[in-house]
Amino acid sequence: MGRGAGGSFVVRINRPERREDVWPRQSMSAAFASLASSAAEIEVETYVEATRELLPLLKSLGVAMRVAARELERNAGRLEEAGREYSTVGGMLIGERSTQKRGTIELVWIQRADRFVAAMLSGVVRDGNELPKAAATAYAATLAPHHSWAVACAFRLGLRALPSTKDLMLQLGSGNHTEGCRRATSLMANIEKVCARVDVLLAAPR
Image (cartoon, rainbow, N blue to C red):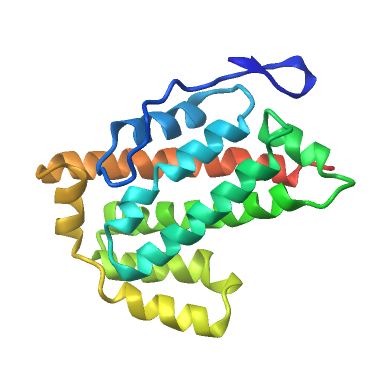
């Protein structure tokens, strides 16, 4: 725990060493759950680490998602670098008011990617769609408006090769479909809450 802008307390998660080839990750749920439930300011470090915990999921879903994972990983690294002099996301946004908004730009792109994952999971667990359809709908609503025509076409094509919803849930649940659904629902809800918190920070006058 440390202090952010204005002297308020911020929460730091004690995380084990990350292995991006392992899925599912209990620490992923813990990271997003902590950010979603805490009223403390969001640390840049914690936000970046939670976002990186999505990488195993994306990388496990095929070529198109591996491309998305690489982009998300690159954005997370850039945000981490830009935010080194700030302890919190809010402090970074304030600090970049009159400077080059490197961290702010990366934060916006990460928000879009996080919302894509949440919307994709929502299409599966709330709407009962197969994963390829849920991902295509989520992509159209979140990332597609900000991609070039060529990138969007390639991404949509790759989404057609995604595994089935059943396979996704079995993977999330380590072979247990019910547990996979529970984890997907929990992750979706926590990402949505974190995105909502960051949206408030982005919308604040600066």
